[in-house]
Length: 184
Image (cartoon, rainbow, N blue to C red; front, top):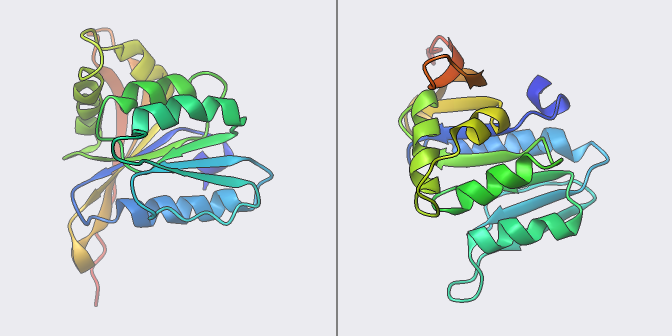
C-alpha cells in the first residue's frame, strides 16, 4: 500500500501460477480509490481495475503488439501504466513510459528471483537494442515483489527495493526476505 501511495513502479516476479496476476489485481484495488487515469495493457483479460477512469488495451495477433500499445499509451494521458505481463522488447518501452512523468506503474514478469527479474528485463530489452540501458532500469524500477511456489504453497518470498547502481555497475538492491507462514 505504501508503494502504491508513493507512486512507486512495482515489478511482480515469479513463476507460472505463482500468483503474480492475483497480486497485481490486489494492488489495482488499492489504485481504484484514487482519482487517477489507469491504463491496463495485456494480452489477455486478466487484470481487473474498478477505477472510474480505467482504459483496458489488448493485443491482437498480427494487428497490434504489446510494444505498440505501450508506446500509444502515452497519448491517452495516463496517470498509471499497468502492463499485464512483460515478455518481450516492450520492456524498454514500458521503462521509458514509466520514466517520463508516469510513475506508479505495475508489471508482472516471469523470473526466478527479485534480482533475477532485473536481469530478465535486460534480456527482454536486448530483443530491441544491443546496449542495455542499465541506468534507466535502475532509475525506473523501485520495488520488486518475488512470489515463490504454486497453488496453496505460493507466498511472497522477497520484497526488494532498487536504489540505483552500485560502484561495481550492478544493481543496488535491498532485499527483505519474508518468513513463510505455515497454513494450519
